[in-house]
Length: 213
Ligand code: 3DU
Image (cartoon, rainbow, N blue to C red; front, side, top):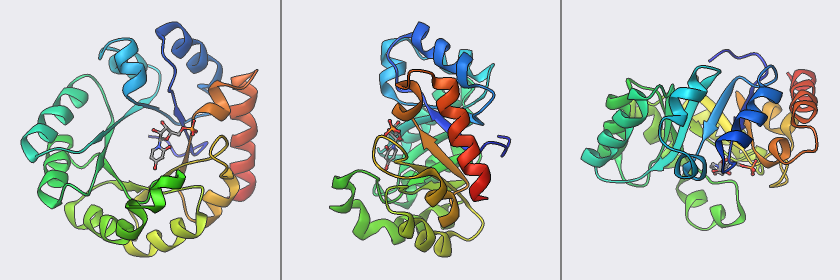
C-alpha cells in the first residue's frame, strides 16, 4: 500500500451502497480500506474483492483461534483479494505464525487496544505481543492512537515493522499525535464516514498528518 496520506479508512458501515458512497468520496485521501465483520456480514465476503479494485483492503477479522482455523480464515480472506489481515496475538506464537504463513507475512498483530477496556487485559501484555509480532515475521502491529506514548514505547520493541493506529476522532485520539509518536498510518472510521462530508473530513485529516510528518 502506498504511504501517501497515511490514513486507513475503517469502513464500518452496514450496506454496500453506503460503503461505496463513502469510498467514492474519500478514495483520494486514504491509502487503504480496513473492513471488519459488520460490513462483511451485512453484505457478503465478495465485498473484499469489490473494494480491492479501488484500494488495498485490510481484513480486520481479529483472528484468534487455533492455528488450523487461523490458516483457513486467512486463506479465505487473501483469496478474495485482501492485501493484509489483522490477528490477535494472545492465542500464542503458533496461531500467529499460521496467519503469517497463510498471508505470506501480510499480518498486523493487535497489541494494546485503543478503547478504555484495552487497559484491562491487553495493555499489560502489549510489549510481549509486540515482540511476538516481530519474532513471528508479521508485517506490523496495531497500537492505540488514544495513548500515543504507548505507540512510541512499542516502536522501540518492533523496530522497522509498521504501526497502524486506531482511536483517532470518535475514540478521542488525535491524528498528528499518533503520527508524531511513530505510527505509520492512522485508522479512522466514524470521524470520516459519519461526517456530513466524508471527503472533506478525510482531506482535513490527511492535511493534519502532512503537517505532523
Ligand atoms: O473508532 P473508529 O470509528 O475510528 O473505528 C476504529 C476502527 O479500528 C474499528 O474498525 C475497530 O474495529 C478498529 N480497532 C480499534 O478501534 C481498536 C483497536 O485496538 C483495534 C482496532
